[in-house]
Image (cartoon, rainbow, N blue to C red; front, side, top):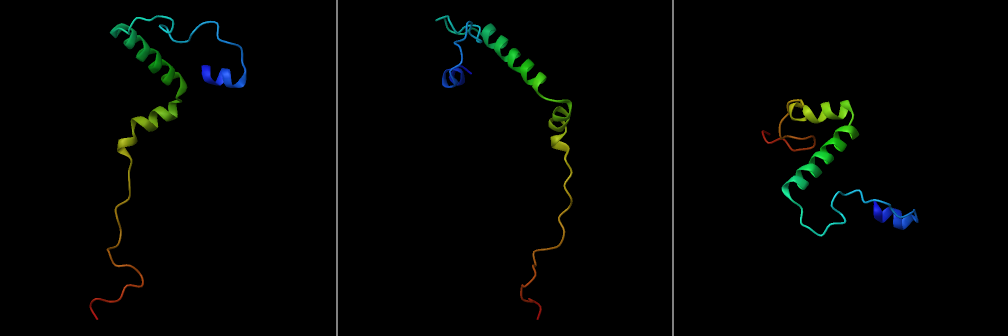
Length: 80
């Protein structure tokens, strides 16, 4: 997001969107879990009910059975 702001000439951000952006300490497991939870909440609010149902039942999609054989139009008769 910051890249687009700088590219389009928007005002500089007053606060960072990331919770630990100003710190020099490494991320802890709690920080990582909090970040993952925030991403999951964002994804849930972004997707619609229809999209969620499509993702939930994607493995149960039906495809029709294959029809015909290996012979195609224009092939010469093998029996003749």
